[in-house]
Image 1 (cartoon, rainbow, N blue to C red):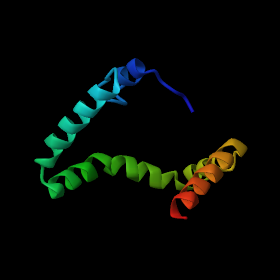
Image 2 (image 1 turned 90 degrees about the vertical axis):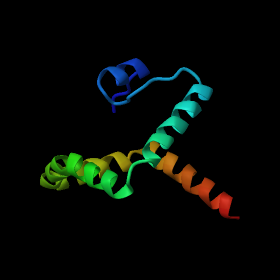
Image 3 (image 1 turned 135 degrees about the vertical axis):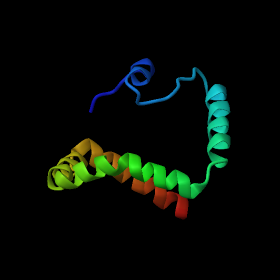
Image 4 (image 1 turned 30 degrees about the vertical axis):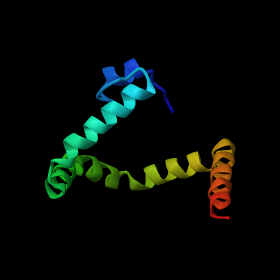
Length: 95
């Protein structure tokens, strides 16, 4: 998987904005939540559905290929190790 610097991610549209510290990130997150809290949930859901419709249709065409790709990724030893540690941490929280 390719990783991008914050500026690269901004340049290709993966993120809308880059902040430089935790305080700025929290302020921006609160602004974002405030903005979207004023929009109807139904309208937001319908818009997201329309925007994602073609992507979902394309993914359904390639479903088997995508599933196999995910399976191969999940079976990698380093991913299995991480998942094991994550599940242990969840178990520790419940005890």
